[in-house]
Image (cartoon, rainbow, N blue to C red):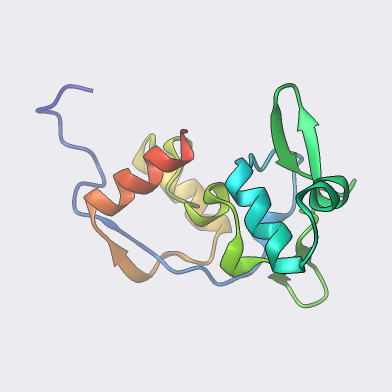
Length: 140
């Protein structure tokens, strides 16, 4: 993008997670994990990294992702309570939702996400800098 071209979200966006589980379930996908994130999850449950990986992680090529159930639910999504069992320790990919490059591609994409995510366009205002930081974390 040309430095002079203004991003459609230059004025920032609002988002407040409602812990509805919409981004934790549905179509199959991947929640990519770093070694540090796996360590943090293991510590949360008081188990070894090896046990954590055996219970909650799958290998996808050379990368690691959280396990999903056949219905697309994340292994840590509690459908009964509609919340995440590791919310405070969730991976960067989860923490940066909805500020992913694919959702920020255009105002139309953001509005499409906003129709299914009750936290979009509500709550806390995120500045352009905060959004870009989250978007860049997601892309690592």
